[in-house]
Image (tube, rainbow, N blue to C red; front, side):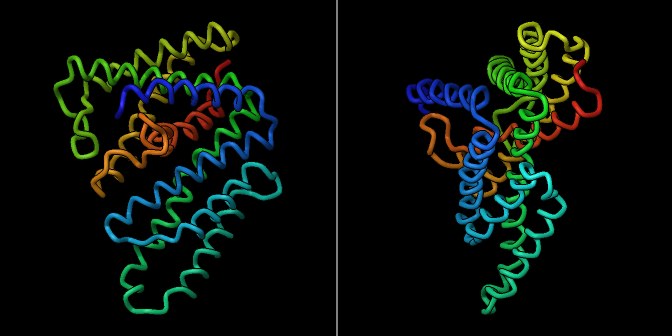
Length: 269
């Protein structure tokens, strides 16, 4: 990545995130999250093209939007959204598979089209629930834990990392770096607690930070597997110095819903 471009892009992204999380009304924030999801989904659907697996982006984007609606409209449940999505994707492929050469690629095509929508829309839309139910400060908590944990992992792993964590997914990540992310995440969590979440119980803050950091690292490596499978380092070059939208949200894909449901079970207070 280009370090000269990385800092200016990061500053712009941080500014957009802060304004969106802190000030946007409910509908505008929901739309903001959908835009991020759709950009990331577009990048995800482009990855298999390098292996000549042709997905159906339009139907996949439609599925992602339908799933997203279940996070905004109370009367439109997630179960209903998933059923409508399955029905639409099933009908689409039944009508579109009209040649034998299409039939050969059908299983991979329908699986990745449907999976992509769930992988990104179902997961990242939990930011909508987090902000709506618990306010912007809890979103800052999640972002800080993941960003600082990832930064600690990167620098410590670069300095003293020796044992490879998951060499197929990410040849540079090490166990030493992964363990260093835990105290980094905890420090970030305690700082946010002291400034923004003073009613939160300290031991819960530390426990949740550790668990979220572990899930975030798994999420990061999972996204890396998709890229390594097609031989690319970044999902795109849409964000100068940072790769693509998918690269920027990879840690949150599994961590955001995990954090949301963890708060449901044990809370912070």
